[in-house]
Amino acid sequence: MQVYMPHTHTYSDQNILIQISMIYEMMNIDSQSPVTLDGLDLLLKRTDGKNILVMRSLKQLDMEHQRRKPDQQAKNSFQKDEKDMGRHASKIIVEGDIMGEKAHETIGDLRKMYIKGEPVEFVSKLSLEYGVNKVVIEELNINSVKGRPYHFQYGMHLVEYIEY
Image 1 (cartoon, helix red, strand yellow):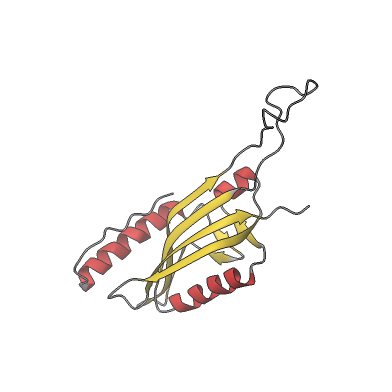
Image 2: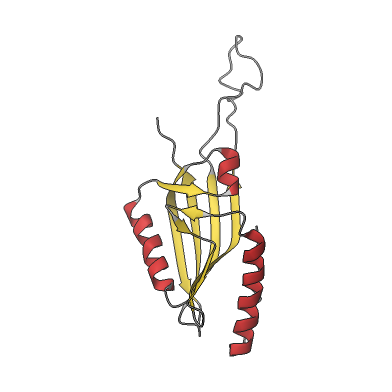
């Protein structure tokens, strides 16, 4: 799922409105596929009729999913070739934008989840397909967009939490 926001050097209201309408169109297409992290929607648009309270969009949602195979050196004569030994914990990369008057609250929620370091519930089309239910936020980067006080870009590295 890719949402593209063109980068412009002028920050006029007209450019911002065009970018926001492009994001709305992309979000309408992707609204069938919710993406949530511990109940926090990462694809969301909420207005009060006149102002955008909060809008969240995704630029990237990728998953690395690998199977484990035995070492060639560790084989003995009783082991079959290419034995499937399960899989490694899945790694997920999430990048997106958070905009609107309540963007600071969303940023605060993400930071709290990261600082706690505890597993949180993750729901997306990819996670349902691969059976990933809980993740730990391994890395969180948040940047404010210059010239736009209520616009933040974020990136997260999530690692699947597996209970033993």
